[in-house]
Amino acid sequence: MDGDFRTQFGRDPSALKQFPALVLNADYRPLSYYPLSLWPWQEAIKAAVLDRVQIVAEYEETVRSQRAVFRIPSVVVLKDFVKPQKRVAFTRFNLFLRDEFCCQYCGSKGDLTFDHVLPRSRGGVTSWENVVAACSPCNLRKGSKTVRQAGMSLRRAPRPPSPEEMQMHGRKFPPNFLHESWMDYLYWDAELEA
Image 1 (cartoon, helix red, strand yellow):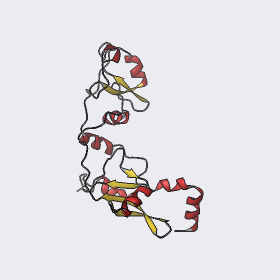
Image 2: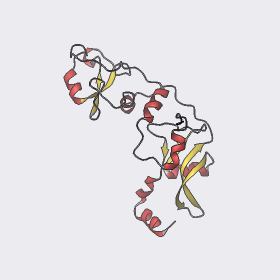
Image 3: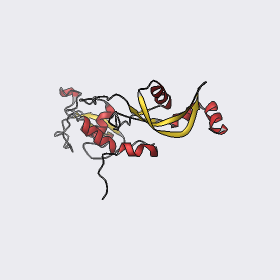
Image 4: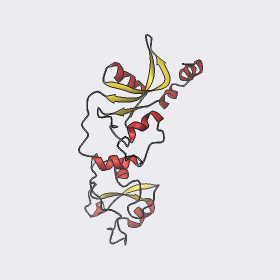
């Protein structure tokens, strides 16, 4: 480790945040594609020391403890298989991901809110089957009317997504940072070019 790197960390501990570790399940698939399963470097080193993970790729940079020097892990594999969840949590983020970050009325992307298809004022509930991503103009246009009363239509009927569907959607929206050592593990089951 060169001196500049060490003093940079000393002055700015947040500089080490740029070294996340991709976390793979025991089958070498990411625990999650979106959000991508990442650990801070400290968690990855701790899990390796506790023998909970195997390190399969490392950054060039190192960190020191009183007694040891560690290369920062960039990819770790869990030693025990974590069973994937069978149900997708109903969250704002997962709703937007299910709808591929686009308004379900006009198809625009960007400034999204969520809309109750059957308005709450008319007995509509907050559930996968009744809530969709909507842009602000469409949400305001629809208001507390039904889709038909507002003269609008849905691009897709809302429904609960499967975990597999969410993984597939997640692959379409990679995070801002992808380290080169992660590529073989992120898309290993993608179709190869002939």
